[in-house]
Length: 444
Image (cartoon, rainbow, N blue to C red):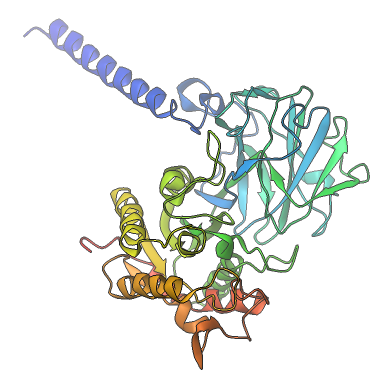
């Protein structure tokens, strides 16, 4: 073979590899809910000139699963209004990017202006003026999110605080139909009329809302963490009965425990913590609609866990609603099989899985002796070690020692199903931080 032919062959091989890589990338972006290619410029480089040159690891600082279409927004959406989401970070960073979702929209969502800033104080729409940054998508301030899809912003340089509040604001001038939202935020966010995306005073944001809208993730470039932990579950993870605006959900407390242990010099993993709980969520069954409201854990696991940034471990607390919301008695074998499927998917991506036992609910309106028997059967299989890499026994630490079918009054919010703030703290405390380290089990 001549030298010329050798170079020609080498060039052909390189071209083939590049072509295959591009095909794989485009194919991956074609699934529902996938990240749009507008986030990247030529050769995958961020368009935003503020993109950092600093080092670090990309991790999730905050997330919330899209849970459904907001009632009352079916026609107009939130046209002509600025939506200011308040989110609490689990880790700090030197740069950030966001994910916006139009999963439940029936038409394209046009965002013409978006910003990110650090809040002046907690529970406030006022922004630190020096931190205000305009967000871009593929180098443009305008992005069109097709119905059923999501987009990732360009990277912007901003000092994101650890354990602080960040404001992410979007403005859409046109009607877009149903708003994709997370209804049980346990955090007050804000709305203002007109394009006030870069307002720092917060004064025009007179409308308060208990929802997160459009925004589903905030990632940061961090030197404080080397991976992301995802808390995956139902209302018990969503923190439905925790104090509003106090960040007392068990994933919040777990995040604080990890930070405290690291500052004390303990050998624990350097993970950020993001919350992918949806109130009412089940392992097997989804809600109504297309796409389904409150998509099953089985159906959303890829989007809410496997596709999150740099995930190293997932903590799964799911199954109680399969028992409570099933008109007929739930089959414990099918619920466990569904959980095992989630574990198999996580392992295929190198993600370690910590699984929780199901907590008691005697006294709740859905309780029956037959449903209690199903819960106990599922818990017995979880405790056997044949489902998860390791187990956290939420049932054992929160149940009444004199009546194990009921939550302890010390931890009961009063509805006999959901914990109080103290109960959520007990859940987080029950997790052995060293159990979060390591690789997935080779075999279960």
